[in-house]
Length: 259
Image (cartoon, rainbow, N blue to C red):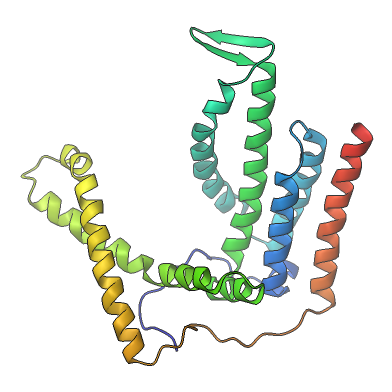
């Protein structure tokens, strides 16, 4: 049973024809998650290993025929946000001082840790953005369900994606209403009342969710939005998974040789 509501989509390049797009969505998800886990578990300072992963991801971007500029625009905002969060690592290390800015000291160990975590985050975000931009949300959520992720979590994510467009419209209407009552105060009012608007939006979201749940139950909703039919892996899917694991093994071999 599909709900007739706007669907907020994050995947703008799902209709491309490439070897990556022809893979089963579950295989794409497994490849991306495997690469993310392998990148995150690599020790700090393993620049050669991350270089190998970066080259592999760049090749995958070219194979998927996704415009690199689109991924770069997404990554620029996400990496900037992550960099701000990681500043505490940069100024909290112990070891040989490199730069002193008053009470703040940047040490060699802290700089290596900061660069390592930022590199891990960038590679992981690149893999996940490529997955999200090339895989439709229903297929991605269905793959999560097939991989035995918690059913409640999958349903929550599915409802969130379906109603995010509605919430964005609701936030826009509330902001316009606040601006119409501001008598020309402009951005000052927007910043001052942002917390109140978000609080009111939360209350409206709770009420809308309650009414939506009752309406879904009245229409016989059984807990499944999407078609549960699927197909087994073929040769291409198993080959993609084998290449992903081979990439991780190669990285670990390079790390072992360097150690």
